Length: 451
Image 1 (tube, rainbow, N blue to C red):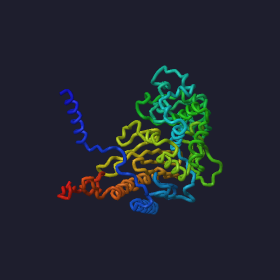
Image 2: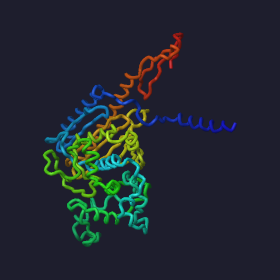
Image 3: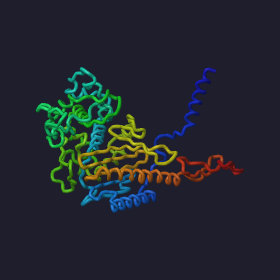
Image 4: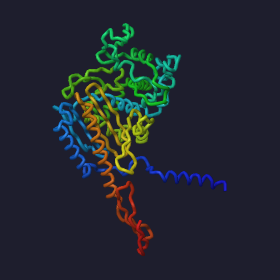
């Protein structure tokens, strides 16, 4: 009798779980293996192209804002969709990509080291931080608690920046209510209009930043976290981080139009506000330049596990913390919106990274469950509005099309007549729910039972 109660409890819990609509998280259908032949994707391509053309003609999209968008599949080298707008804008046009640089920083780290260092404290590899004392936890970061994994996932509790965006150099003197800063209090580097900071200057300023929260308490955006991650990787490998990015990402993927610093006189560049901002030592957080074609190659390589073992890719494409937004989680360094594309089906987690520098906005988006993704780059005075419109449309049209095309292909691949050894025969048909349903069953040819 002692075994009955646990089983009864498990049965009750299973019943409660089954009573709730809780589908398994992950692919609802197998991926579309030949997307270029899919009529669903062809219709989505025509629809999106038409909507963009109409929006540009009506003024809903600003004609003066350049943009590039590419939609791709893990299972094809051919693009599912491509559209560029602007004078001489094309797949090899050079944009600033802002914080998509963070994806490249984490990708490089994983390609070089795997994930075995994520739990190591940053103080082990950045000795300047190890020397800092915690006198008051409100004002002093306990750097011994900050791990490399926390730096990569917004869970370090440290400040966003130590200089970037500081407006003190631009404030006129004598503003009522704002005390004047003396020469030693004024920043001399690290923000727009000033030179880049050296490592020593950066770490001195980082030492004087205040913590946002305890480590692993709540996610908080930080640029300087990725600078520190790069320093730690340099110490572990005894190689300069730009060298690692080149040898681990740019060369193997043939990303010949991606640059870690401002390129000299490029003929294919969109040069607008923010182009000249030198991130210096903070470049691993947001200083890189790239093209639509290169970003698509980079993004597709993640979905294909081109440079990483598949198990490591699956581990990387997972959420690590939630936000106050019920439909947004975070990873390393992913921003992960959760979308419901089909009523009753499992939600789709889209692994994205946004970037912003001056007049440039950028987005890299991956849907591992569907095997598709897209890259989007905008540049111009109306970048925010253009970016928002394009993102909303591509999510609705192409991620929705990926779901519909996979459902259609599942019907072709799996619906049909099935016979068991005893000779029983039945027919299964694909329907508008994420399963195959048996429509009837015949037993030994003596009758059938509708299900």
